[in-house]
Image 1 (tube, rainbow, N blue to C red):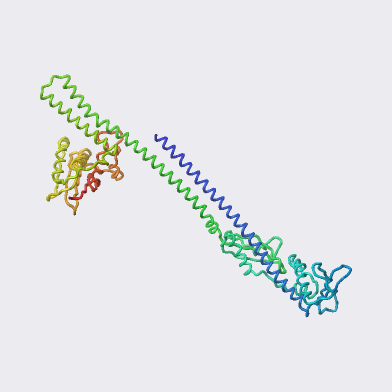
Image 2 (cartoon, helix red, strand yellow):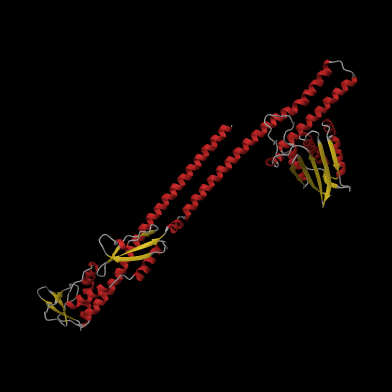
Length: 497
């Protein structure tokens, strides 16, 4: 049996360990997946944010460029219809040219209507079309074309001064991150663009930082590159995994709880089995004596010619042992089936002094057999309790029986009772060896006896104290045990009537 129990425990321990290992592995994989998603998101969002900012700057450059084209003090815009190309030819030139005059820049758009000369409305349409089809293409390519010297110089100077607006970019980036449920703090860094990425003196090496890839900012000369640094995002990543971690923890705790409960149940059943085995062994010893006595007495009556007086004595022995067996079996059945717990008490107003005297009187043969001495100390006033006389008497006899069985030689028993407020306190103590602390409560459990191996020198079946405590509880009282060196004391507390 013990081998099987240990095998079950070993298998359950292995299963629990395996579940824990799998749970840790799954959580680790979930964490790695969260890290991959996080890194992918912060790179993707930064690239989109830079593209959005470039779109804003492109619109702003285009707006400024259209103002330069519309400024008649800088640029002259003219138009004429060409029969050869069957389209209106627009030309752009500087109003103030240097010593070397360059030819005007000409262009035509099929989407614009035919005109023979430029008008204010036609000029506005041309400028918008030029910005849409030519200028935006140049800005996207990062090139500066000198359509006129003035326009080229103005655009080149503007691009030279342009640097990434990190405040605007931070605002855009923060909003885009929020859409991905990322609220980590971050830092934007920028440096001169190189093909290999950030220069060494600008590279962050702190291992607690997550860095995005560097993305080129298309405007400005020289070109710039931008990256985002996220200091120690592990806590945020773990917070995003909180439900996964909590579910895993709950599953593991539930598994451990079931494991512990199962082990306790198995251990409890094992203990009950051992107690029942011990109970059977004790009962065998308990029943053998009266059965053997009855058998011997019956044989003597049957086989020997006895006098009437001797026969009467043997019959008395048979009746006494038969009564003892009947009481023993009765009490075992009541305790074993729980009938005692369903029993209705026959409550009467009982005199404590008479109850104690009667219990001692019933127990006199056992006391005489052990040459036991009883020291009786009683309350001088007459005390009464509301109780069942038979059951309360059995309780006192059970406690006296334990005092006699487990007392040392020469046996001395102290029994005293007194009033304490509205309660009756009865104490029974003997000079036996003290009970180990771990058994102080267990001795009140059914079938339990303090382990003595295979020794059965003290008769008993582990039901008396369980029965006694149940009866005292039914009387709204308590039965407790206290020990000191070479002294064991049972204390009964009952409400006085």
